Amino acid sequence: MTRTLAHISDLHLGRDAATDAAARGLVEALLAARVDDVLLTGDVTHRGRRSELRLFERTFEPLLEDGRLAVVPGNHDRMGYDAAQALADGGRVSVLRRPGLHVVRLDSTAPHNRSLIDGHGELTPRDVADVEAALGEVPRGAMPVLMLHHHLLPLPEDDLAERLASLLGWPCAGELPLGRELLRRLLGRCRLVLHGHRHVPSELRLSAPGLPDLRLANAGSTTALGRTRVFSHTEGEVLWEGWLATGPMPARDWTGAPVPRRAVQEAAA
Image (cartoon, rainbow, N blue to C red; front, side, top):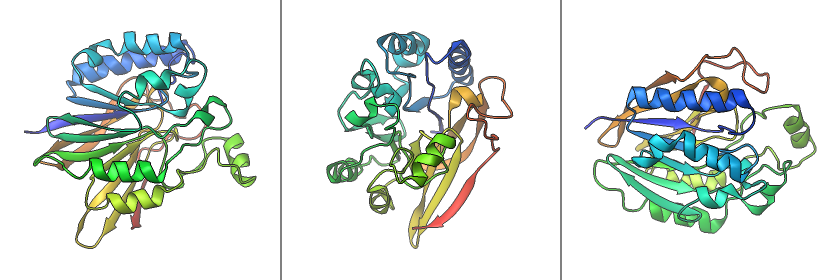
């Protein structure tokens, strides 16, 4: 049976009225398109406030009620009232089984994310081992997917402050420690890695002889972009992918960077 999967991220609900309106348009578009599953990879809220979490629950109620929506927290969800605790149901690593999907959810946030300038994630040897174990028994015909907030390999910084932090050697905008080790273990076990954190969408494809490609997709900031990536899949394979418009598509994202139609890199593992 062919099913569809939408990847959304970095909503930043509560940031301003335009962002909240974009989130409502996103839900309407997903419902109208009858997307089967929706994976939300963090920064659901802008400052982790209780009011922002309640806004998320009200806005996404139709997708939450029927179990279509799966969530992991992002660093912004750790600020203020710790919305991450409510969003990380199941602990650091948990498994969600949906028709045609075997989704491993990894919470890559940490207590240091309470600080606005410490947006980097955490990935421990225990996390890596737990993710590998969670991918050990994938039902036949299901596509194995890993979802998390932070990126596993280097990506361009979103803004000047992050570029400056990187020049100073601060970890704020860096990739996850042990990210490459986790990817090495994912080859042959996982087909899709879905993440957010960087607000400009991108895609990376890793390959190794004799193994199916491993695709890493960064959703970008869905509410800022006005679109979401959708995958069609069956029997553990992606048939096609495209973009679903969820609102007016801006020429630039909220960091001022041009929004690319597609950013794809090819890399050997």
